[in-house]
Length: 146
Image (cartoon, rainbow, N blue to C red; front, side, top):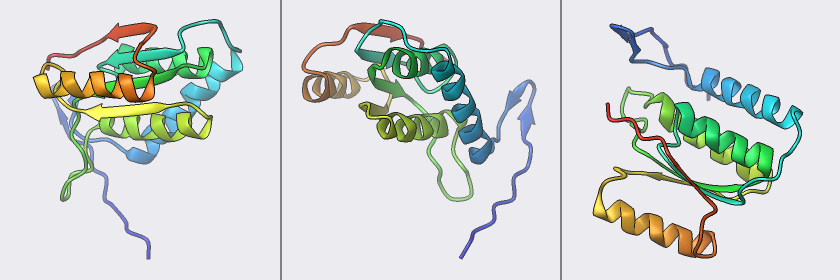
């Protein structure tokens, strides 16, 4: 059985309050393909991106993984799907990034949490110890304070 979702445009001022998950997947695929087509470059192997669900943080994560072959951990604070809400664009960016990176053989960890919370800080340390050998090569700080 296929579920149909009615997508409606919701804009407040210059901020889009709605999004299309399938459009986001297509956008992510397009960006990954563009990076891959440029070839690889020597770069970091283990990357922590604070604010990796959109904008500069997401771009950094994309290029680190699909350009330099890095494994990544991203901390983003995005709204998941709930009830009639499809969630935020950042939520879906993280989902689609993780799927593609893991399919390409990379570690792609996502934490959906407040980066300033002590519990999140402990979780980040645990993720680095467990999945990145206890160290990172690059820290990208791209936090939005919306």
